[in-house]
Image 1 (tube, rainbow, N blue to C red):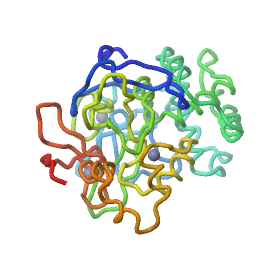
Image 2: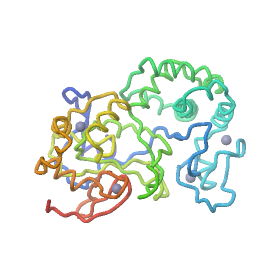
Image 3: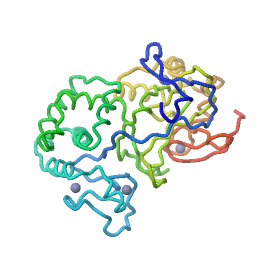
Length: 346
Ligand SMILES: [Zn+2]
Ligand SMILES: [Zn+2]
Ligand SMILES: [Zn+2]
Ligand SMILES: [Zn+2]
């Protein structure tokens, strides 16, 4: 792990494949990793407009009062927050041509909405092969094997998209399926801004990171991920992983793939549907045996105390609260950005 090689090491973890363990005693709030994505693509289905206008390079929201934000000179419907983003965008002339052609594709329009987002990934992957082929190899080194549904989707999208790229940057149907499987298992979401009373935050983009994808899941995570997509100016699609609590050397470092405040049945369903596994962490083992009143009866369990301290209480949130880098006593929510001062009394 480049920037953090002395903090973490990758090991085989019994029953889980590879995972990340602490290579030395680590402190709550410590930053373990800051990493730029291998690939970023919009989560908006091709045939509908997103709820907010966002920059197609950095994915920050373009304020509604902005008059004539810079747009792609060819297609004009891909907007950017600045000329710099327009110039450094991965929206290359090839990607532009492919996306424009796909928005006129009747066969794609007849497919489920999910396919339109997958089409954006396949276009972005072709573009990556054209501009940053090393990222394709890094994506292929991640975990994930295509199942029958992914192979079908890949065959369909490959026949539609590969011919839209120059011959030297066409991916085979098999590679498209491999890449889609890696994306499905390893992608992170960049979300629209949180609002306490608004609708659930929707996803504005998907990203895949080479190192961050090595962290296994736990519903009682000792680390959590942050992004500052709407607040930082440079590298705003980077992922930052910070420790929730102290971790001794040799212990596995896990993040939660879903919001930590969600109940057992919801977690079980999402982890199976989106990641294809059943979580067997300590919290799941205990909560599997709870009745509807269980939580109240088991108030003294260490994990209930953990959740009381580390689940954000803001309405509509349920994100994870992790300390700011030491020696801070302030906890930051990784979902809504709320801060609270640490208090050890239960
Ligand atoms: Zn931008
Ligand atoms: Zn364009
Ligand atoms: Zn679990
Ligand atoms: Zn929150």
